[in-house]
Image: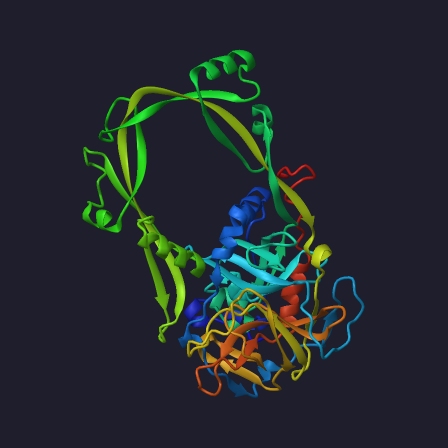
Length: 514
């Protein structure tokens, strides 16, 4: 892999540093994702909650049509191997043999994350062989946003299908990528290896007493059941503070008061229309009526949800605003909802309400180390170009001409020999990508390029990951994909990630481990 160096004069370095070879420049960087069990637990719950609603809401990492570029062939020596070829065998299998038939490997899946704009995104990825059976290989731009900061709430879901996580969710703990991607957003280093925690799934809930609730380290919540005063009095007399917890509260009336009202008051939140929101003053902190307005969104939603909300809005059941984005050909590419709220202080009334509080804890199950559950593909570096590879991914983007042959729901594949030349794309600082003739579109990025793929074992050697999509003949259709060339520096990054140790998030009883 080439090295990008800042000019010495511009960097203000001393002449003494001229003697240092370029090898002094690091080849890898490491960043924390969610190393703490509590953060990992909440991240997985974010994606798994409401029966996987957030997973279904996510859209593929989107490549704009203007970024679908042409490849330029080059004979640059940068594309040559920088050492001897190497192979690391797949997890638990002998060296695989070539096969013409294609079955889907168990190791592939989707990575999900939230970008800086709050959008739920996904890419493709695979489990790869590792010392601690905990490593995921994907594209660098599916972990690092603009090559700088890591995405939030990053998880890997092997075998993902329509909101389901059949083998659990694996939360990213530590990310490793090329120094050039992290520092210069250089796509010759567009790959990443992520060490993930043990997977887990949510298995339901259990009602407990207050002391058990307080001691629980995992997910927990309180459900309130409104009761009559005599039930409240009888329960409090019988149980005291043990068992169900008894509480009371004042009801509120719609009498509006200012935020500076000295008596008992409560803040209500009522949804209003966009027109009401636009007519109201935006800054009402000093309004003696206490009115404040809040806008939530636009929030990405699925096309299915959008269509349902449009129908509900026509029936007057939805007050929020619904939007859709389109490409240059008029094809829908994203769906969003926005809601508006009036927040108003109201005076507390004299009516007393009584409740029985039920304490619940959320149960989770450890599904084990990633490599033990789905296996791990092998790893290859410094291999000759012109290798036969089988590439897997979840394409979902339309072609530049607007045609959308893929849904992103199920994995697809391409197979063939990689190009024998190196290729460059100046807009992404690419000088040494390897290429494959393939029509998969965005969403497939991060998917593995498996050399020597064995159909029977469903294993091979990761010798690249899909980085970019290209239209070589200019007909507004993707016809080539490209990957960083996996050389000795990629192997160095892999070796660093290979020693990242992670552990289980939840214990045998479903509790959150410290």
